[in-house]
Image 1: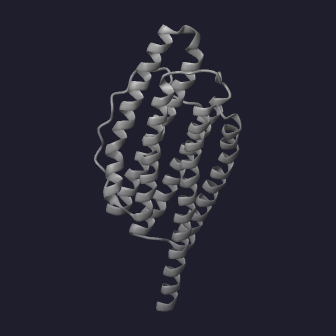
Image 2 (image 1 turned 135 degrees about the vertical axis):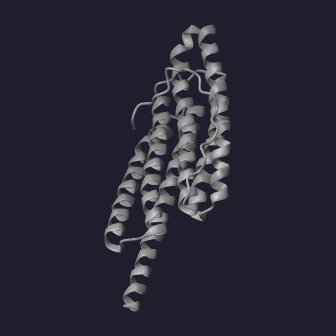
Image 3 (image 1 turned 180 degrees about the horizontal axis):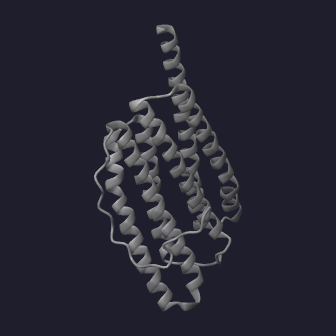
Length: 239
């Protein structure tokens, strides 16, 4: 019986390590999608933007693989307590990472819809905002890989910076549209980009909250959020 139990534990550990590796790969691809989408937006690179859209299928395929492995592991290994908690949280995390990839794809899709000769003040602000979001996503995924509850908490605290950036960009673009009506369409696209980035920050925080739950078995206290303006770009199209 001891040999069987030892084999079961070893098999579960192997499945868990594989699961973590797949989530890490998926997270890296989602992070790269955001970096490339914003680079394409900044430079007007249509081919890079199209590549981001094409590569999103790889993220979707990884999500399906993770879900299949997690369900199979739960069914075959019957994990208990902490192990089961991690498996359930992993399923939730992979869904969140897939959404981050979708938002990166949505940003890339807007590059082709914009006037490539435009020069709008908000774009540098968006690039700065995206740098913070990339850091949050990266740190959230690192906290999962390292089982680092303290890093997870720091991610949630820093998300308020993203909310503040969004508020600033929103006001900048609304003012710009009022003063330059011919750029309303371009500014509207950038508003959607800003909202996508804000949602990515929220998703990074969601990952961090789940990591905290995995490590501690407790739910993180609700975080303070930046004040959200009343905007018509609040809901983004599905990926």
